[in-house]
Structures are given as C-alpha cells and as structure tokens.
Image 1 (cartoon, rainbow, N blue to C red):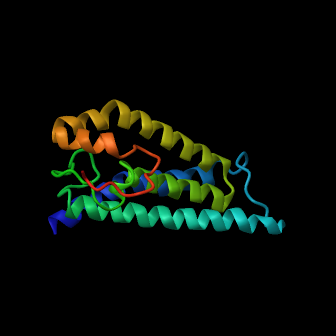
Image 2 (tube, rainbow, N blue to C red):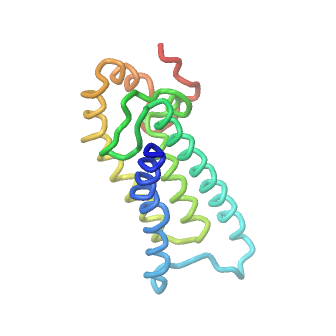
Image 3 (cartoon, rainbow, N blue to C red):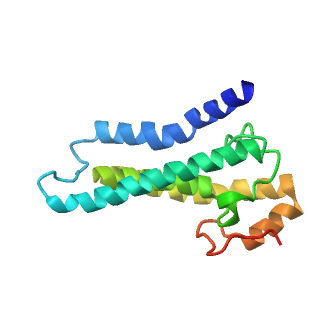
Length: 170
C-alpha cells in the first residue's frame, strides 16, 4: 500500500503537472494568442491523428518505465525517492531516458492534437530543460550511485536517440 502511494504521489507531482496541468493552463489562459487548428479545414485530421498516436505512444512508454522503476529499480521517478537498482531493461536497452521521451511524446502529441503553438513551445522548453538537467545533475548523480555499471551502460546506450538494436549489457 505504501509503495503504491509513493508511486502515485511522484506521478501526480511531476509528470501530471508537466503533461496535464501546464498544457491545460496554457490552453485555457492564453486562448487569445494561441492559434488552434480550424475545424473548417479537412487536412487538420492528419496532424491530429499524428498527435493522437504520439500522445498514446508517449503514455504507454511512460507507463512502462514507471512500472520498471518500481519492479526492477525498487524506487520511483521522484528525485526524493530514487531507484535503488540501475534500470537497464525494456526501453532502457535502447535509450537512457525513455521516461522523459514518453512525456515529451505526450506533450508533442497534445500540441499536434490541439494545434497549439504554446503547448509546442512548452514541449520544447521541457525537452531543453531536461537535457540540461540530465547533463548537469542526473547523470553525474547516477555515476556516483551506481559507479562502473552505470558508466558502462552510459557508454553503450544513447541519451536521447534510440539505438536500432537493444543493448545486451555486454
């Protein structure tokens, strides 16, 4: 029960604020300057379809990663309750930060689905800030916590652009 509460709290406080609360705030507060897709133009179905696919894929990827953090990592996505074990399975065999990639896909999907340049700008800011955070703080922290196994993993698995074939751990 306590484990479920820890995971729920970390999800509500971090990704939910980023992927639900902030886009909602942008969409409802800045309607006068945020242009949206016109319903009178038939071609908008294509970016909306791509947006729906990206949003769904991002949510599924994020959910998979949260599950792996709990099951394999024995922790949560929250900095105050980090994983106890290095997670290098599932999507982590292709890219080092699939959870952040999942949230980025959700934001990009929302921007395309609604045709909101402000949500697209928020997605870009989210991606840029996370890149900076990972380079400056997260990766050095993981090197301290996990040592050589993380350095080996980091040398073989890219930060953002996925490998074509999964890393075998060798």
